[in-house]
Length: 260
Ligand code: MG
Ligand code: MG
Figure 1: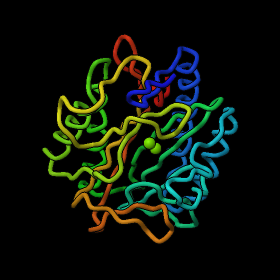
Figure 2 (figure 1 turned 90 degrees about the vertical axis):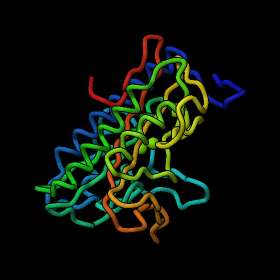
Figure 3 (figure 1 turned 45 degrees about the horizontal axis):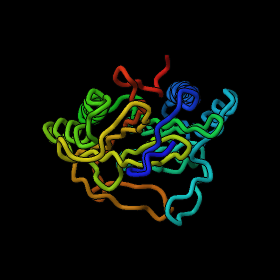
């Protein structure tokens, strides 16, 4: 169902159930990839593990073949972004090394409904600064999710994420944002990681959104790499990314992309 005024879809109980199923498959796939991450593995190998898991669980990858604004279709199941790469990295024969930080974004479709979630993790032993960035980005997502309930505005979520992150001295990426999600991977409304309390669309029960802070140690400016997909920090600083698909329910919120 579409709220014509805002272009935001309200899911029926049946649709919500399919989104729960998609979310659980994304959650399990994240764990399978996490288990495989170690120095020496290449990112294409991680992609193969993710695609096998998603298909074994009865879903299809959301990102494979996805086109964004005239881009070449995304060629893989997961996005893998290393160190200064923020999002949308294409799996390849690039080997991950001890000390790297790696962001993995997973999407899966069940009967036409998407789940979308991402995490960042250290490879082997990483620096304190890297670990702090990762922990803080995950916490920023938590701060955003804590705001979610029927009646709040998108700006309440955005502001919570921005205030927390900038308070720690990090920058939030502004060019890429969270989003509504359902039959489309990216639906209205946009969920920026910056903004003002009390502004933006009002959320209500039955909406589902993907909240996804991207933090950097340096500045927030981004650059698109030559492959047409990978987004990196313009200043080469480290970046981390966490994302969950979150449903607004009558009693508050429900994270769909964590294992139940
Ligand atoms: Mg994602
Ligand atoms: Mg997303």
